[in-house]
Image (cartoon, rainbow, N blue to C red):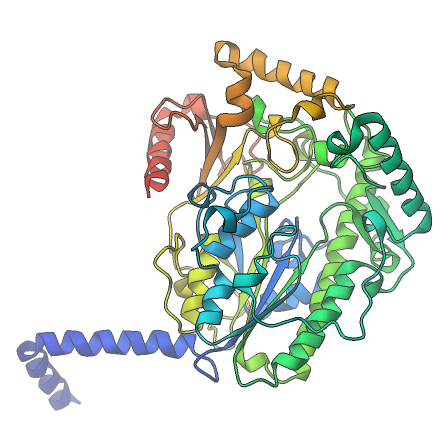
Length: 549
């Protein structure tokens, strides 16, 4: 041994360049060995869940029945501090799937289509297609009708023999379908076709005595399984995406998932007041929920109704968890689990009564923090969660590395390979999100329309405006606050910092600062920006650095 060591020392002194080359080759080979599965290009199962905050057993909520996701977390890496880039559907999904931040691609509201604004950008599934993959999807991956079928998918889902459930307005119960039809007729009569958009809904929740496939998530699960059963027989690796619409409103699920819970044991939110000294434009008036039948159009949501809403949200989570279990079982039956990478992610969080509001669409922890679980067959320390700060834009480069394909040049995220190898590894110091003036935006994040002011929301909007005027004083300007004010937020291991900026004047002073100390105030209930100016300066500088990238 001694003679070998002496020989190594002589060799290393005289061949430093060669030694460096050998070490580099060794490290590269080690990364390849970790990334590669039984073949050089593993399959990808890509699972998206709409409006799911980290409300799962594996995230510490033992009251939630989520056995399949909890099992996945034990088989992979559960990221406890993962954040979306904007807490609303289209911007979050477009950001993740293009690997770019919302401002970069110009998508900060649901109605903007990333492909129209960025014709040449290469999406995650599109990149995998270019490297030899079949890519298919079932359910909601991109937002709405902006599915990018021409570029992002090259394999037709197998819907043979399946019938999509007929659920007008998402409702399975006949009485709720009738309520939906009456509401549609009434809203159109009151406000016309244009103004009534988004106001036509049935009840906020429903427990129908139907099978899982009686709602669209169950149907899409069957489509995904039939498609999977085809994909495994091709000689190409596959990228299969399945997107679940629950627990997005309406909170509809088969009754048996409601039966998993005792409503009296469901715990309500621990705090109902807005953050002390928080930005008044930073919270909305629960517009999205209030469009639903049976929900008050103004004022607080009482405890009885809050408990029913929570019960229904939890039932939806369990319903989706069961569908994921069906897909994993199909993976196992096809004997491809050992060559499949599984990624589960939520597009943003959701307020369930915290700060007195219901919905997504804020810059706070509750709306920006998301569930993220990644499973790879060769992962060390399986089941050990990670507290490392990560972002949804990190998924794109991570999957590229895991699949041994090159990363496109435009990606803004970081590969999470180090954290998959070691849960204590750190790949970034902060996570960044953004949202434009939640108080004065519709639930699609677009500016309040004149038509919306003419609906039953008019008095509520006036009340919200007055609250902002009182706090902001001479800074108040409707044009600015409705159309040009952006809240940017970064989260580091201890603090959440929020800065409200006029996007027309990027170099101007922010209108307002918020700072929340998670060491002493994990619920973000007190803005301490005024008492900690040094932290504000530091974090503002870090935010500026990210914005200039």
